[in-house]
Length: 530
Image 1 (cartoon, rainbow, N blue to C red):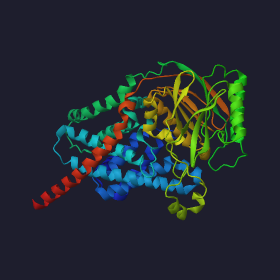
Image 2: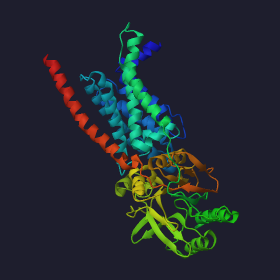
Image 3: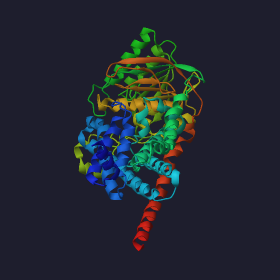
Image 4: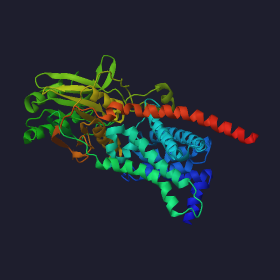
């Protein structure tokens, strides 16, 4: 029976059988991510997906890949149902699945073409390299389309809880995705290559040596590397406050109650003595539900607390109008001074903080779209805040943590630590908060910076530059973290070069696909003439 299954996987071109295998693979990939935490699933899943598209043409591979992609994203993004119900979940999963299906179709065509070339022993590595590029390019496309993209389900993020996450320091999250598919593809190609009976154990073993060496380098290299997380630029004492406030976009709260909840926890912290000698206190996104820049009472409350009790800078989130534009904003307030600097979210969430093509979508789903009354504008200011003690910290607001270039820019502009301020209230106890915390940890490794991630309800945590967890708060409980965090100035290889990985993968895919199509057409014409 086992031999029959193996041979079927190797040789069958049944589209529905392949679709089933691919969908199971997509489910395994989804289960590898944080909250589900079966990290080997990323390798098992991609193995099954690659097996399912092997030998297929473009359109069959597109169908199989789309079904695999829907199984993948349907499971991984199910937290979207807690936000606005099943419609955003279905739409987001379907669009992501179609992009995945397109990548699978391109991969199948390129694989078939390279397999016809006489590349001898290099052939498996060329195919694996190309497949890695194509599925990395898939993440690039998903990160920009549509409406700025959803770069959430990237392959490299699945390994955040493993020592393999150290690769991100060198090659960025995109590079780790490429390596995952590359290694998996090598084993898939070796599995699919039929060996005649009687070839002998010695010859079979020799054939596995190149793949074994590649696997040894992938799994062994990070095992012998230690990432430096020390404070090479000093330290600073930071407090991060989780008010346990339902600050959801559509939550109904008494005016000022969210601000008050964060003030209560903060004042308790100061009264306990744990806040003595603080260099910075950080509150999450939307922690002041009343705008202290335009309203007297919240401005007085914050000023009084910062000046008379905290006696240290406070970094917090609010929403405000500046001119005719409405912004998701982070403010830095100083004792005696008040507002000293502010940052506007550069990447507001489509269909959460603004509605693109509003008339079109209003006609499709008026009840949902009408809930978003004001469209937030994209910010143009940098996210760097200079703290009076001489430290520079960078700020990212919620969804922005998913975009590589934003954290890279902060580090290049001098950020010595990164504050990620988020509001996860809309997603309840779903996997969203856990997945976002995992992205924050990857950002710590990638940038070589301590990351302070604070949410209204959790997951809130402080993560060292090597990705290790310094401390985390229990979700849906008010609390505060106080730590002396490491400051660093070094620029990691990922920050220096990581931004080129996805565009290069996309360019390679863009070149390989038409070459493969033309090459296969010419081979078919040549075969007919013969």
